[in-house]
Image (cartoon, rainbow, N blue to C red; front, top):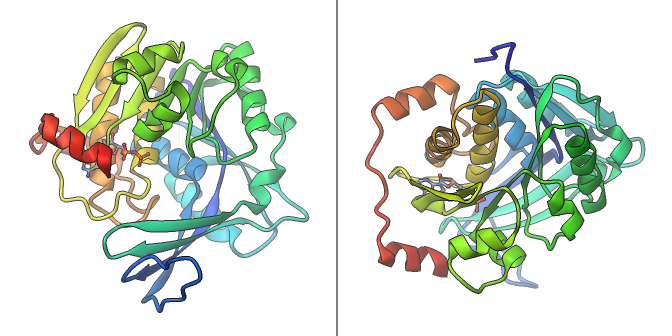
Length: 316
Ligand code: ADP
């Protein structure tokens, strides 16, 4: 952990404060329902992934983020600091800290509205100097043209560019050309590659050197320089899958920054994200590095890769 010969992971992206209300169901359009308790949690895909890279991955981690000049920024900074993430904070003058309003139904279904606020003020020139950075980890919750410019600058500087293409969006070809590792879920893969063909065909069509598709409880599948790697999921009692994908991304990139082989890195990311599903909260649910070690030394059974389970997951 934190071996000085390993490169730093730089995460550039979103940070929000999540306002989560639990309710019997998600309201229909025009409907008002009475929910139950409300809680706030630090969130945003960028911040979640930075916490995962530092805490579950044990990597030296920095994050470029934008926050407002308001009290909502405080718990976000505190969570990143507690995980050991070094922050490059852009303090937006005229925009508040980003917030997400989450209605979480008892069925685990949710409906989320994000007011991105300060996240929209990030610009290409805000990317910090890349000396010592081995991996740049990006998502799509900040403006697309800005994320694309960061990818191009890092690619030019010889940094490994990792894109988690979430939330799902169509991407210009020149953006993908600057990406070394693409991480998507099945819906995001279908949007980028089209619905035709099996997962491997779709991953190949993207033309990115390394592609990882996460498959929920079924684990993940990767195409690494033409070779397919399959990592089944770990069977756990999931209580909250919010942030599972973010824990996966941060842990995977941290493991790669420690120069672990790709299959070992996928196994650690799958274990950390399965553990995250057993706890509430995106950042609060991220396990510590040694918890991932202990989990992998006595892992629960692997989820079956049966055709029935595959079909069931695709429908949901
Ligand atoms: P996203 O949340 O981005 O849609 P996935 O649902 O594919 O991503 O989940 C990301 C990773 O989290 C999976 O590859 C898997 O390792 C883990 N995961 C998600 N749901 C479960 C679950 N129910 N049981 C075990 N692991 C899970």
